[in-house]
Image (tube, rainbow, N blue to C red; front, top):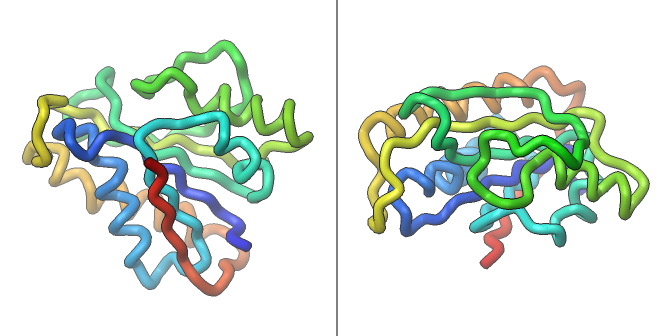
Length: 162
């Protein structure tokens, strides 16, 4: 079982909103992060709370309409029902952590949100140049965090939730 869960969300048909999926794909194929479970989904949902309660750390990856296009933020997240955060989906990372804690008695002690500022959410499958250019830095930020973990399990897996 993976010790770190990466939950990337967004809509691959809404331009820059797909950045989370692109980051997830880069991490899934990266030999430097074995044993990390990567989940790409359209949005965060309550069904994810159980899986979150089973890991030591979780990283939420999403687009942000409140940051400068292409900018990256990597911030600690704590369980909370009140915070709206910078994510564009109704259930935010803090609330999902609180839900895991309430339903399953635990949330990961290490939880972070990586958000990328977006430029366009128009109906198309292309990322803008500023967002595309930010992907290597976003992946590097996550890999840097993972490298600081004590030990990593053996294989990476990826799940796409419709």
